[in-house]
Length: 509
Image (cartoon, rainbow, N blue to C red; front, top):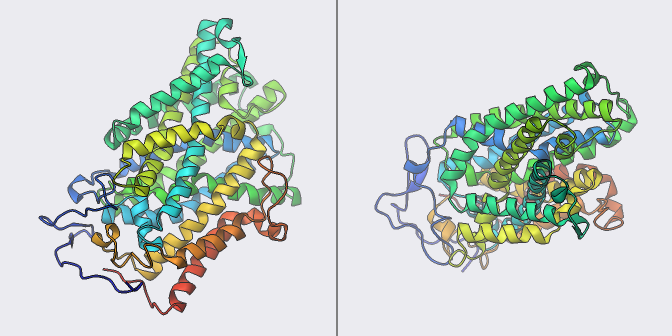
C-alpha cells in the first residue's frame, strides 16, 4: 500500500448539511473495526446541541479555579505587581485563544474528538503519539487539582472537627487525614465522570456563577482585612519595568500560555457537541480571555492584600482561606474552592485523557475506562511535589508542557487549515488502508516535525527541580519561548516536509 493512494470511498459515506456541518450519511453504516468504538465515533448533527452559553460556562468553570488563581498569585510571589501579572495573563490568553479556535473548528464541523482529529495529520495509528502525550499531561494536571481539592476538604474538616483531624499523625510528610481528604476528592470526581458528558455539561452550567461569586467574596474579605482596597493596589513591583521584569516576563508568558495549551489541542473533545461554529467561536472568545483576565485581577489583588496583612504573599487560596476565624466564611470559601476544582478538573483533565487512552485501544478501552486509567496515573506522578513550589510549578512544569503541546498544535493547524483547507473524510479516519493510513498507520512527516519542534522548544529548558541542568545547553536562548518555538517550528517543518515529499496537499474529501 503506498502512502498516498486512498481507497475508494462510497459517495454516501458522509453528507454536508446546509450549515457546513458534516456527518455520516443517514442509513450508512457507522465506522467499525479496531480503530472505532462508540465514544470515538462522530457525534450526529442532531446531538450537537451545545450553545454559546454552554461554551462560555465551560470556560468560566475551567478558568475560575484554584490553579488559575495560583498562576496569577504565583507571579506576585516571584516579584511582579498586580498590573504586570494581569498584563501577562491577559496577553497569554489572547494568544492561546487563536489555536484554540483553529483546532476547535473540527469539532462542530465533523463531530470528532481530538485523538480522531489527530489521525488526519499523524496517521490512524500515529495519532496515539500526541494523544498519549496529551493524556499524560492531563494526568499530571488531574493529580495537582485533586491535591488542591483534597487540601480544601482537609482544612474545612479541620475547622469543623478540630485538632483531632488537623493534628493527626503524619505519614509521608502529611497528616493521614490529608491523604484521606485527597482520596475522597479523587473518588468524587471519578463518580461524576462515569455519568458521562451530559452530566458534565449540566455541572458546568451551575458551577460557573457559583465560583464567580465566591471569588468576589474572597476579594471583599481581604479588602476588609487590609482596611480597604487601597493596600491591595499599593504593593510595589520588586522588578520595575526594566530589564529584570522583561527577563521574567517571557518565561512567565510562555508558562501562562502553557496552562491552556492542553485545551488548545483537545478542545474538539467539547466542540464536537457544538450546535454551530458560531456557538463555539463566540462561546470561547467570551469565555476564555475575559474570565481568565478577571480571575487574574481578583487573585492578584487578594494576594497583594495578603502581603499587606500578613507580611508575605499567600499564593495558595486554600491556605489563605484557612486563616479566617469566621467559620461561615471559611466554609463558603472552601466549598467554592471544591466546586471550582471539580469544575476544571473533570472538564479539562479527565475528559481528554479518557478519549486519548480509548484511542490507544478502542476495542478494549472505553471512555469510562480511560477516565479510570487517568485517575490512577494521576496519583502515581506525586502531584503534591509539583504543586509545592511556585517556581517549579510555573516555569518548569508549565513551560515544559507548553513547549511540547505547542509543537502538536502547530502540526494540527498546518495540516487542517493550510493543507486540507478543513476538508476531512470521516470514514477514512477510522480504517486501515485509507487516505490517513500513510505508512503502516504513521505519517513520518508529523512525527519528524514533532520531534524537531519538541527538542528546540524544551531542549534548552531548566528542568529544576525535576532534574539538575539543561539537556541541551546550546538551546538555552530558546528556552524562554518554548511554546512559540514549538508551534512555529513544527508548523513550518510539517508543511515543508509534506510539499517536499511530492504531495502538493494531503488527500482530502
